[in-house]
Length: 360
Image (cartoon, rainbow, N blue to C red; front, top):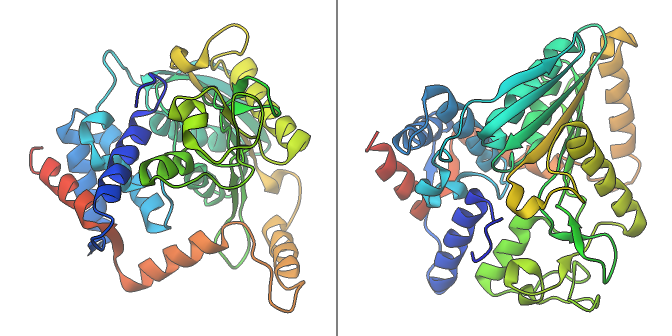
């Protein structure tokens, strides 16, 4: 990609989609790999490109989990393993300031996956008996699928709200300069009798990986998901920044989407310490921000998980055909793969992982 802002993981994904596009007349070959083997080989591959045991294991677990539920931010990141190597001079994320119920973690240019995992675990621990807030700044890349971290917190018995900002790809309205990132947010909570409820959404009309997929495959963007430089709707990737144009991705839901994106920006930049609009150029600052709010439901109510189950069950049954709820699709894919005892992985990606792992 020509712009310095593009994440290493996104660049790896783009390279893979470009490869697929060139081979579009050939059916994609898939191999089925057990979760344990996928984790073992991916961990080894990450160690081969320079990560220590902990850094490799944490990132591998996140990517394999994403792959298992069909998310597009999974093992595709390993198509170009060298792009997943530690950033020059990067250190480990460390707690920079701390109180009994809050903390700020400096990423020291580590990947968002490592810093946000540390932040979620710390927030969950600090929230025992109440509420905790943990911010993250100075990470070199995005954290990937926020649902992973939401489920991680909910499985610890916490309600959690996680937000992440990113470089300027998204316009606040038609004709405006790009100011927001795709700025995802995630809400998750424990639910009695089932897996946690996890709602993970981008505040943009299309996620960055979706744009990269369209670009690599030569496909148009979805309708009303982007503006050209004049503020008109466009479906051409080349009209927006990622494709070399002067336009931008649209936000989600008009002024309400702008409000949500702005909320994410305030929490992750003004509060947590990520790159600040008007003071920094996010595209070059390499200072991604994240924020985590964790709540111990037992401190506020008895039987929260049971009440949550009642609410979710009632909404799901409110139509004769059922209502699709956030997380249903990914949960179904994950359950199917778990039942089969294997995760389907594109052979081309798996071959790269195993070849790299052999060098560890």
